[in-house]
Length: 87
Image 1: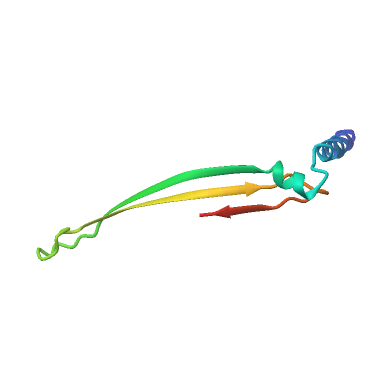
Image 2: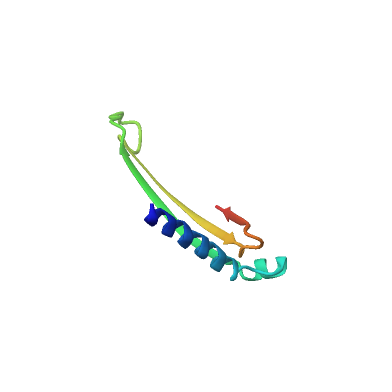
């Protein structure tokens, strides 16, 4: 029981401390936001088992797919934040 009380106190202190680093205005929340990004690539190769001699691939199929992911998260303002991700 004592450990549970200490954990609760630690969570409250951490929540109050993180609020002191929050933005004061909406402009500051957007200015202090964070941008991140990723480049992704996938390659799929499949043996279709098609032995038709009229097709060029003769039973093989493959594809390369690429993508970009961009994310933006604002700093917290009154305990709330906004995030958006584009692909």
